[in-house]
Structure formats: C-alpha cells, structure tokens
Image (cartoon, helix red, strand yellow):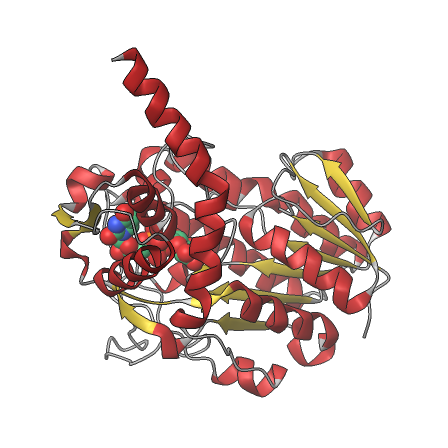
Length: 356
Ligand code: UGA
C-alpha cells in the first residue's frame, strides 16, 4: 500500500527529519513536512513541501487531513528535564494540542500513525497483576506511573491518555497505528546546551556536550539505570513497513526498539568516550562523575530503572528486526556531533578566554 501524500507532523525534529528522507526515498510520494522549525530537515527533495506551522492551528489540521491519505504525528516535548519543570507545557504538547488532529482524522477517516513512547510503561516492566516481566509488552504489561507529585510522569500520562483517545476513535472507525519507540539514537539528536538550545537534552547529547567541552560525564545516580538503544535507521525501516502494511498494523500498538542493545547508562558513556577518543586521539581522557537525580533534574524526578522492549509483535507484523549494534552506530553519531559542534564549541571557549 503506497500512499499518495503523507503529512509528517514534527518533521523538523530528530526522528521526523530522518523519517521524511526515508519515506520519500522508499515511496517516492509527496510529503507535507510540518514543524515550527525545519532547520534539521536536510532532505531537499522537490516532493517534500515544507510547512512552518503549529500542529494545533485549526487551518493546519484542516489542510493536512484534507490533502493527505496518511498522517504521521511526531510532535512532542520529550526531554525528561521538562516533565517536572514545565509539566503544563508537556501535557499540552503531548495531549491537548493533538486532540483536534485526532478528531479530524477520525471524521475524515484519514489513517493516523501516532508516535507515543516507551515511557508509558513507566517505572518497570510488570504484568497486570504486578508480577515482574523481563520485557515491556504492548498488550500484556501494566502502565506503572509514580505519584502525581512526581511530575516526571506528566509526559507518560499525557501520552497514555492520547493513546486511549486514539484507541476509542479506532473503535468507531479511525484507522490508526500507535508506535512506542524505545531510546532511538542517531545523528542530529536533540541539541547542545548553550550552542543551539538551552536546558538539558537527552543522555546522548548531554554526554556529547561534556566530551566536546572536556567536562566530566554526569552519571545520574551513578548511571546504573538501563536502556536499550536502537539506531534511527532501524526505526525508519520499521516505519516504512508500518506504512506499507496498513491492514496488518491497523488498530495495533507496536513497540520499536532493540533489546540486543540493552546496557547501563554508565556503559553507554564509556562506549561514547572510547569512540570519541578514537576519533580525537589528542583529546584529554574522559572523566565521569555521579550526580544525584535531585541535583541534576530538580525535585519531582523519578526514573525508569530498566526499559527493554518486547518486539515479538513488530517482528511478526513487519517481518522486521533491528540490525545495528552500538558499535555499528557510534562512529557516525560521534563524527556528526564533532563536525557539527566542535568548531562552535572551540570558538565559544576562545571568546570566553579572551573576555577573561
Ligand atoms: C526519554 C523520553 O522520556 C522518552 O519518551 C524517549 O522515548 C526516550 O528519552 C528516548 O530517547 O527515546 P529517558 O530514556 O529517560 O527517556 O531519557 P534520557 O534523557 O535519554 O535519559 C536516559 C537515562 O540517562 C536516565 O536514566 C537519565 O537519568 C540518565 N542521564 C541523562 C544521565 O545519567 N546523564 C545525563 O547527562 C543525562
């Protein structure tokens, strides 16, 4: 099934920018690429129409649901540092602002592929009776969020509620697929604080920022938390198959992740530091320091200690397996951050030194 025109909402983000390029290459179709900022969208194919707009604007919702046969919705505020510092913005971006789009897709019977998050599973993998599970499963795991005062869970809760809204519209005829991505990494992920953004990005960009500045890598609570990291190219391949297999994926929630690449955050830091050292042999050796979660994120933060996807459903429906190991991915990721940010960080350091 090849769509004639796809709307990608959030096309200027990390995942969106990779997806647009992958979709246009695979399907050769027209794409409406929508975001408030499209700077990261390097794809300049003439079939990609750039639309700078907010996803909650009624005219935008009207336009994309009228023109497209498929809508991929990826807009989100998805950096954990925001969940407890600006929870209302997080709830709006991940829930309220998307309600009109979901409603309009339902009214127009436009297929919706919505990006939710692995974070909906919450603190740990448990079944619905509270027994431990090795992996998080779309149809069998409970969704275990912490207390309301722990605002870390504002994001997971907003994402979960939107999943429930989409599911309910599905019962009434909306064709949809919900994707739960697990810690996908790659080039162009997030931003570097003080260079092209402010605040705290996700762990990959935090560590790259610290390596490029010669600062210690900060391991929150020692870095024993575990994540399974998937290459963005593996996600793009899976997404092309979700688009192709509309009937098989209809009204399904699908985990996409790479359980083979499960490791602690400290191990991720060590692997990044080793690759950085290989690419820049003159750089000083990486240092690591443990910081408390309260100090790093402020009050209201709680963590998932481990997050491993069960991808049996993705394998079955998509005939897909993630391929890349961490050592396959890291050379291109590190090279991208070094070339993108290295000169700007050196220039900023020189100008600070001359002021001093
Ligand atoms: C986040 C989002 O909440 C998810 O929705 C999203 O799916 C996921 O990122 C993703 O990248 O796909 P999380 O894994 O908690 O979830 O986010 P990170 O900021 O990447 O943190 C991962 C772990 O590293 C956490 O345990 C965090 O405490 C730790 N961390 C982060 C550090 O030890 N040092 C840092 O400098 C930053």
